[in-house]
Image 1 (cartoon, rainbow, N blue to C red):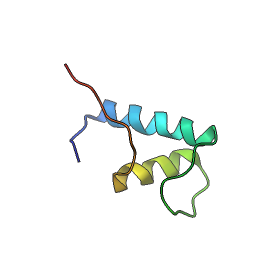
Image 2 (cartoon, rainbow, N blue to C red):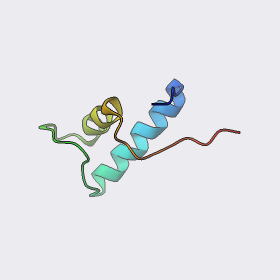
Image 3 (cartoon, rainbow, N blue to C red):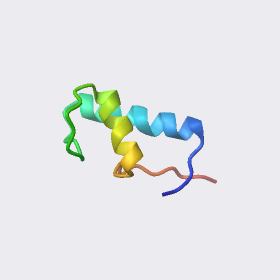
Image 4 (cartoon, rainbow, N blue to C red):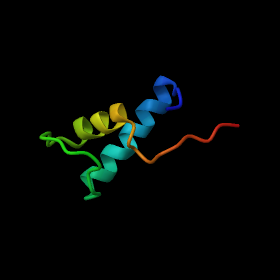
Length: 55
């Protein structure tokens, strides 16, 4: 997994939490309900399909 800055990490998790709150399927099995908690858990497991383009 690529090393992201704290700002990139926040953007990725925030974007994924928004997707989950809008009804996107959850990519892991979890008992959590809050979209932000789910997004953080997905990020930690490395399953979020979002990348960062750098110049």
